[in-house]
Image (cartoon, rainbow, N blue to C red):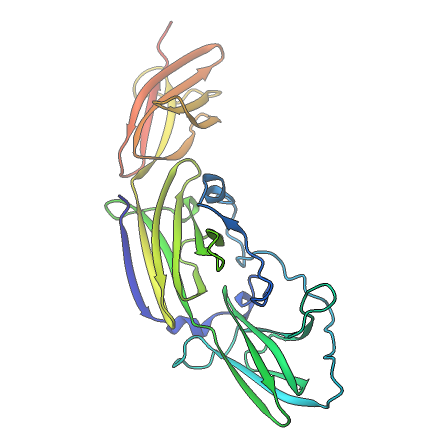
Amino acid sequence: MNKIRLTSALMIGLWLVSPSLAQETAPVPPVRPDYLDISSPSDQNQNQDENAEEPEELMDAPDEGPETVVPPASDGPPQPVTMSARVAEDGPFIPSGVEWRIYSITPNEKGELDLLARSSDSIASFSLPAGQYIAHAAYGRAQASDTVTVVNGPNQIEIILDAGGLELNAAVVGDIPIPRRWLRFTVYGESPNGGGKKIVAQAVAPGRKLYLNSGVYSVVSHFGDVNASARADLRVEPGQLTAATLYHKAAQVTFKLVSEPGGEAIADTSWIIKTLDGETVFQEKNAFPQTVLEQGEYILIGKLGSRVFNREFEIVPGLPREIELLAEAN
């Protein structure tokens, strides 16, 4: 059973987030959601982009909204509108990093809502004729939409994002640290229509803070790119930062083909690792192949030209280890 260590703190760092991380997914009002639904976290989805380099900004789909906004269909004069956002009902205003979109409340002939205005100012100012609109605020991956009414005269409108933070890390059982380059996380959330899980964030580097709507999220930690993973369900609370460390029952391992115990590695060796059930989990041609394997028993096969050598070995959670395969004379 996978272990997990949790800490929760007031979300002081939330107010210091860079505006460049504010809009990581294109905002869509709840009347026309665009979700990626999956029935369960498949291995294919779990391992996607695990070996990609850590991006400057963790981005999902680019915002492909219109370059120009559509003017409201109203003959009334524009009214001053100021919008601001809080992460929680009793929390302070978010001073930076909020992205705003204002949509029409009535679908057009295509059944879509026209984007009327947008702003990257956390306290945004708009000029809108009196009437109803859908206001959408995004902060990190936390999003909220609300139907708002603009009246004649000054309008001050608040949106509550109901958001918190999530910071992920992982270690090998026994509190053995894992190099950052070996770790990536995938975060899943519930689809509003009850159709299963949706990917909220993937290829997340350890220590990166995610800003999410409050709720329970399923997290998968990927250690390497073979079969070592750890899972946990984590709750994000409004206005708080939840830091979690997931624990792996796995180990880093390096292989070498030698002519005698403790000898030099023989170059041009092709490697295959199989489970005892015959499933191939790793293949590489390298004098010193390195990978990560979850706890269990395996068969190591080394090929040097037409010669084939093999042995069984066991992975136990712990520090990195080296396994030799002896090239015995035929």
